[in-house]
Image 1: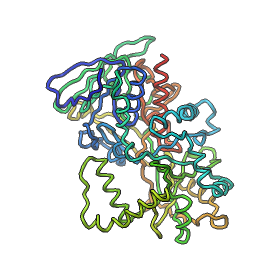
Image 2: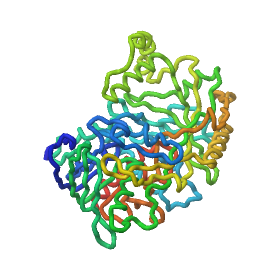
Image 3: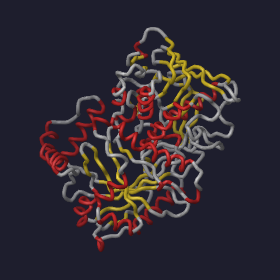
Image 4: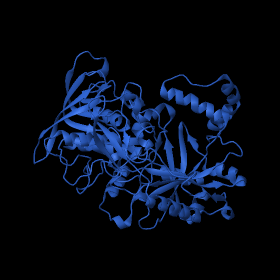
Length: 520
């Protein structure tokens, strides 16, 4: 079987295909799963709701209705089409680690499972993504900071390096090219919206999915029969699909205690301090991003001993450069990601060239990001939200243009979250060593909920929580409770946002699932 893509919207008749595995969603998780399963010899069909080049949710008619605050993670934070949100994202890879474990939660919980699987599969996932130095997140930070790392550790702060994919690797669509010549290369159908699910009786009292029907905007259907189905459609859409499956059955088939769609949460992010002017140069030397070949590395700070019950968090310095060269580079690279011509004037090009040369010099000669002298630098806090059952994805009676029930989203930042942000910020700033030991001085910001209020980080989690029953939607191997041949691989399975961007952990869980499927 040769590798091929099919535009369902360009087809003239409806059709039917069969496969070992059907993957719904061609974002980071779906693409990683498809490429890894192809390597095992599995016959994979991938269904993607968007077009060949990713667009925002509004362009394909996926417009959620907000019952409380608007949730940007469901609008400007997600994209549909080949590559999904990886076609626009920053490409940050950071693992969840022992910092996500809490002694008060015991050793037999979801976070213990997640952290263990990240540790087991991190090197393999990085290898697949093109990084050859292994999971050196902690070691790299310690080496780069040198004596400053000891100073920070003495103050109660650990360091962790982030890893940003090179620009040409950010769109994970490139993973398919690594298996395109295999006999079992995935078959891809885009402009194909998962609409109809046919559950039937399975074994041991569970249900199973017999068929999936995908539909294009012009009404062409594709029926997929597979032994196994994997929903890899992102935290919002994965929850919507499970709710749709449950409603499609004559009686509910998900676990009676499960809470699909509930506990929608994110990281809350805001600046908590500014570097004083005479410390800007020192802060840039210590904490400005480095380059390791084509890979960019940042430095993060984590509390060594957070109080019992404190939400998970991390801090990092932001270098919001406003130089003309940086703005020009951002527009040029953004247009490449969007596959369109850059909207830049001749004046912007002329004024930005000199600054662009400095960016290139620092990048290639010094392996550092160029930070203009006097550029403001902030300390940013990212803290997970407390899981709240009422923050949720649900279905409305009204139908969209594909005939699916519309999505309703309720998301709010609670008073408990706001209080925790202030407490966490105060703890971190109280630990900061300051100028007597060679650290830049920080000037705390007022956290007033007005001009300096938190925003979400487009890291939705929690809507298909992993666990061993109770309200869990999937088990520790990501299989949906109550359905024997359906799995979910998205950030939705994380119980909370934790101390890291969720994508890398999701990829490690995807890698584990491929290994698991080979054994069953």
